[in-house]
Length: 252
Image 1 (spheres, rainbow, N blue to C red):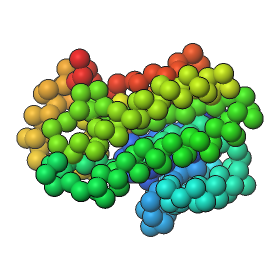
Image 2: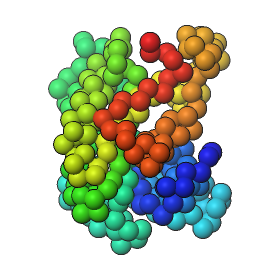
Image 3: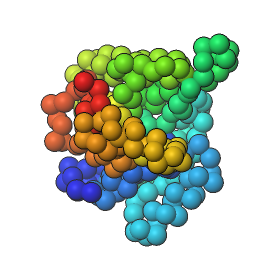
């Protein structure tokens, strides 16, 4: 993974950072010299991810946390802990989220709300509470994880594309609002990525998915991590409000 000089010594918070795309992003920012607050949903997953990182480089400046992102009090405590451990936040990567595949006939209000709470409410909360810190510095970068289904939806699990459509709207709106404070807000829209869930599929299914992509392969977590790092870096200093598709050309 290429190092990006402007990320060195930056304090980065990455939600959903213990596996898949989030873990690849944690590795990428650390390899570029950033200090990373890696967030996960449970202590066990955070500890496991930390062990992997320390085996790669015992001197990595990384700390693990597992707050409830739907609790304002816990997020406030998190930011205080991050500042004490690493410094005040420069970059926020909102990657935590859950997918969904339920039919509308199987939905209830509670399930729909559960998806929206993590995929939208928690993202808004993290931005709302990090933005004042970045404003004081006069500079900051926020990167949200959207999805290719935010651009054309999917056949079932309507809560998921709905949440990602909302992320696109939040990204574009806050880019306009926060730009004057030196804070850029962008999003990455991943395509089909080789996460743990995809790896469990039959090889024939994977090949069938790859055949629909112009580049004739499915994406790797590092492909998305690279895009996140670019948008967070000074290389993207005039990029604001973008929804960057990283899908091999799947969405035309």
